[in-house]
Structures are given as structure tokens and as C-alpha cells.
Length: 280
Image 1 (cartoon, helix red, strand yellow):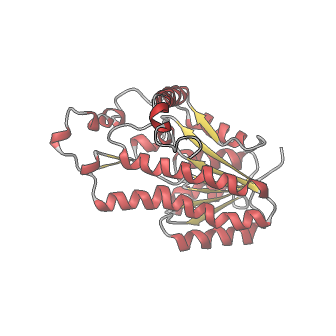
Image 2 (cartoon, one colour; image 1 turned 120 degrees about the horizontal axis):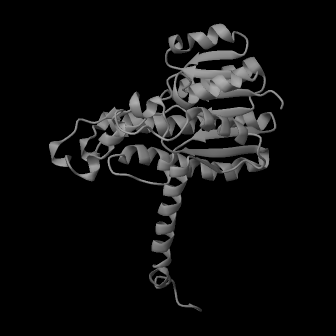
């Protein structure tokens, strides 16, 4: 297996940390972005040549471009770009503030879009590469109390699916990763919760509180195994458009898609009724 150079956003915890640790352990080079280098001091000290920490706030488009350009200039080639930075925001739609909505869109959706846009010219110039976008099975399945998180994930999935078709001829492969629940800080550390309204107590909108309670059953997904599958996917040609991680995530996705297809199929006569009659 040839060594690769990777650019990964959000490596201080969660999947980003798992990916970075496994890649450095096997001898690859990683540019990892963080908001605080103090959280990756151990990696900086252990891998002074192979790990390059960059301070980046992914809501800052100009900074994204600067860091991407600097990284390509320093390393010459980057084989894989992984858009990983993001977080969960929970609460009923009317419980969320304008600022919370704007920030999660800027982070999870716009930040991911701008990272990909910044990398594409460089990947084209070097003759190809791979882009991996961390999404969620929540990019296919929606639950109450997660509206804005779903909005960002459904949005980035549509963006990547379109762009993948635009750049395939340049040797650039794109993969959307859809993990299920995993034992990372996403559930039990970084999750943000709106100021809850009592009117939504005992409704589906507040069902997420059980999921966020560490005393309840732990998430089934193993972050280390999930990270290993993501790394392995880069060796697959052509690039898989989607990578679902977790049996529960796959089961839920398939169930949702079957219901969606059945709903569409039931509208066949209705849909056809809006066409011009044949010959007109």
C-alpha cells in the first residue's frame, strides 16, 4: 500500500481524530485542522514530520482557501481531502435561535462546500484525487428534533452527488460517508441543544434527549472500525458514491427509502395527469 497525504478538517476529536491516528500510525502524512492546537499536542510531538496542524475555523471561507493553498504548496500533492468538521444541533424548529441556525449552516454545509471548492482546482491540476465528505445516515433519514442538522446533511449530500458527476472526468472521486450512531463526542460532548419549550415535552420533538443521555444504551458504532472502513474506501475504484457505516444505519436507511419509493410509485397516475396528452 503506497503512502498518501491527507487533508482532514476537525481532527481534535471524533472521526477526525480516529482517522488521523490510524493514518499516522501506518506512515501516512496528515494535514489536520483544529480550532485549538492544544488538543493535538500529542500528535504534534509524536509525529513532527508527518502531522501538520492548521488552525482553521471552517465558517471562514477566506481562511479555508488560505489553509488549502498553503498545504498544497508545502506538500506538493494531497491525495485525499476529508470534510469532517461539523456538529449536531438538537431541538424543535421553533426552539432554535436565528444564530444557531446560521452557525450550523455555516459550519456543516457552507464550510464543507467551500472546502471542496477550494480543493478542486488543485486536484484537477495534479491529475486527480479523492474527496470524502462525512455526512450521516441523517442525510437520508429524518427524525424530529433534528431539523437543522438534517437540513445541512441533506444539503451537502445533494451538493456532493452533483459535483461528483462534474469532476469524474478529471480523475477526482467523491464519497459521501453516512455513519450511524457511534461512541464519539458527537452525542456525549459536542452536541448543542436549543433552549427547550415545555410545550414540546412528551412529544417526539424531545425524543432526542434520551439519545443524548449517557446513562442510556451506548451507541452501537465503533469509531475505530468506522474510521478503518473510511480509509479502506479510498482504495476502491471507482469511488463509491455512498458508504453507510453501521447495521442500524443501513436498516433504517433502507426502510426509509422503501417507504419513499412506495409513496412515489403510488403517484404514477397523478404525475402523468399533468403532462400534455400524446401528440400535443
